[in-house]
Every structure is written in C-alpha cells, then in structure tokens.
View 1 (tube, rainbow, N blue to C red):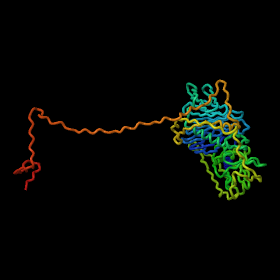
View 2 (cartoon, one colour):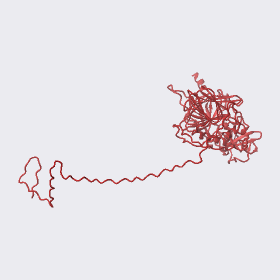
View 3 (cartoon, rainbow, N blue to C red):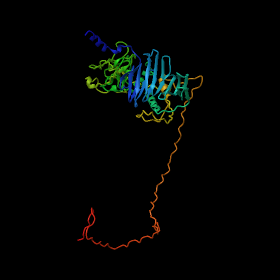
View 4 (cartoon, rainbow, N blue to C red):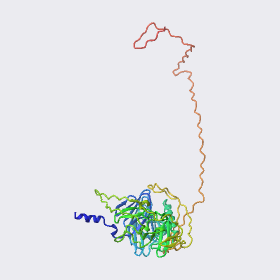
Length: 525
C-alpha cells in the first residue's frame, strides 16, 4: 500500500520532462512503412509528420516509400523493401553544431545532401563505407547487391571505408567489390525508381517557389517544412504582433488546429501529437496557435524548442483559444511490457477527428477571404506575396529519357516509369540562400565531368512482320488395293466363284434333330 502511490506517480509522470532530443521530420509515407525506436516497434503503420529521434529505424514494405527531411534541407528517400536508421542525431537548435549519421541497412535509397557546413555535418553509411558531400550532392545507394553501388547524379561525394578513399563526381557511378575495392564508371545506369525521386524534387521545387519573406527570415529557412506553409496558407505581417500564418482550412469558421491528427505512443516521450494535415509539422513543433476575434486561428512562430524538450513541456501549443474551447485530451501513458520473453507489441495510433459540433461554438458567422484584406488584432493587413525566385527566373532543364531496368522482384505495386529528369539546380538555388546555380567545386586531381545523357534516337525502327503463309493441306490419297494374283501361291488353279442365285431356296428340313447341347432348328409349318 505504501509503494502504490509512488508507482502510480511514476506511471503518470510526464515523459516530456525527460532530456530533450533533436528530431527530424518523416515528411512522406506511402504504402506499408514501419517505425522502430531502440529495437522496439513504435507502430505497425507510421504516418507523415511523425518526429524521428536518434535511434529511429524506418522500414518500408513491398509497396512502401518514405521521405525524411532534415533542418538544413537535406533529404533521404527510401524505395520499397528498404531500411534506414538515424544512428546519430545531435544538436537541438540552429545555434548548436548538428551532426547526423544515417545508416542504410538494406534496399535502395536516394540522398540529397547540402554538404558539410560550419554547423551541419551529415554522413551516410552503408556497410563499411561512409559517404560525405562537398556542396549540394544527389546520390543513389543500392545495397541489395553487397557490398553496394553508388551513383552520383550531381555534386561531389567522398567515399571512405574499408577500401582506399575515393572521390566520385556528378555523372559517375561506382560498384564496390569485396576483393577489388572500387570499380568506377563515368556513366550511370538508370533505375526505374529515379523517376519517383525526380517527381518528389519537382513537388518540393514547386512548393519552394511560393516562398515569402516570412519564411526566408526564420531560423532554418532551408528546412523544406517551411515551404509547406507558403503553399498551404497565407502569411501576414501584423504590426506589433510579427508574422502570423493561417492555413487555407482556417477560413472555415469551425476549423480547429487539433481537429485532425493522431496520438502516437513513443518509448521515450509517451504520447505525442502527430498532425493529420499535410503541412502539419512546423506549427506543432514551434511557436503558438492563437485565436483572433473576427479572423480565426493563426499561428505565430516562436522558439523552436519542441514540446517534448525541457522540463514542464506543453502538450499542445495554444496561446489564446476562443471561449468554451475544448483542449485536446492527452491519453494516459501506457508502457507495454514484453510477455513470455517476446518484444512488446506496438501501441496503435489513436486517431482524432474533433468535429465542430463537439466544440459547441460558432466563433464567426461566415468564411473569411483567404486572399484579400483581413483584420488581425485590430490591424488591417494583406497576405504576403511570394518572393521572386532567387537568382532570376526559374531555369528550365532538358528532360532526357532513359530506359530504366525493371523494379526488383519484390516491388509489385509500382510499375516501372521510364522518364528521368535531373533538375537539382533549381532546388539548390532555393535552399542555398538564393544564389544562382552554384559554382562547381574544383578538385585538384581531376575536374568534375559534366554529366551529359546519351541522346535518344530520333525515331525507333518500325517492325513490319511478314504475312503468315496460308496453310493448304494436300488431299488425302485414295487407297486402291492391288489386284488379286492370277494363281495362288502353291501352283494350284483358283477355284471358280460360286454362282449367284437370284433368290435363295429353302433347305430341306431334317427328319429328326441330332446332336446334344445345341439349339434345334425350327421346323417349317
């Protein structure tokens, strides 16, 4: 009885009071994707916008794909049947030195690295090989064929590991060998998943083209998560308030920032909120949501100390709420324990769909204008417009067409796609501070070659098959028996044929029946 209250207090202790940790964003989830933390399954099916901490392992199924975004703009993308671990993730704020070690355990993945800077250092490891980048670099790593293959689409990558160190430049690929070290080629064999990686780049470039002065002046402005806000809502520069952002959905009078999402149980921090909105990462990690009379909900960015960090961390980041607002209720912590020596089963996600009727309120009568003049905190303001594209108009790139090899046998849900576009210069211009295409990095030993894809033939030869011959069977031969010989074998003359009678004559009836066991003939009447 004396130990009961202490044990209960330990179970109800706020996990957010533990040591804060750096997190990066799981920005895309398609198909079957699992999340593990410290060897323990967190959930059977993870969702987008989930914060990933040090030690997190993401595994994709045979139809799964995932994308991880880092604060400096670096990106990691996993194709089906792949596994990636965030082995090291240090440095909580932008003022600290950030170090990241990403380990590709199996499968095929793409990495877009911003390169080592003064405060950001990202390293990719597969097997015994470490890969670092000089400037913006796009690489593809395939470890399905041990010990691995590396293709550098652009930039400069440095490989260091069990074999001698090697620099690989844009347009080159290298196949690792357990006995011969490295085999370098000045070409890249296309893969059918290259098109998917390019599609994601185009989507991110499109969102980045809507960047406003609000996001360009915020900390970690290269973080792709800021682009989600420019593309899915409006920024307002409110006098005496600073920047306020409001999503497009907030123009509805009954919208609630915590109406759509999940409670996810984590081993280190208990239940945390994961927003169900596509843009729902930064507004739930930094700053506060505030309700403005006559306008509705808006989010004001502030110190990006995540709610799980520090003692006394908050569950929901709401500053001012409307009257009678029902705050989200955080589930009680649950600690699954292993049974019979097995790993504890993952806790399922708790889906949240808070309807306006549940709030019992109607804060303003009609939807507001999403693009025109609005009133915020007694000030009349207009939405900010996207800034001009850094370095001038958006560059255009030719789209070479490659013939990709088929997907691995395990990939059945995504058919091969045959288009490939190398459009990274636009992305570099956006996420590297607004300069035009970066200058190539001089390499003393050899200049970086320019990757020029082989031109496509102007027209493919047309195959005209010959018409199939019509088969006409020969007529079947008529069998004619040979004539009878004039003399039979043995030399005797043939017997004459018996005469043909016109009508048979009845045989005479016997006078009596003879024999036994036979059938007697019928007597004529």
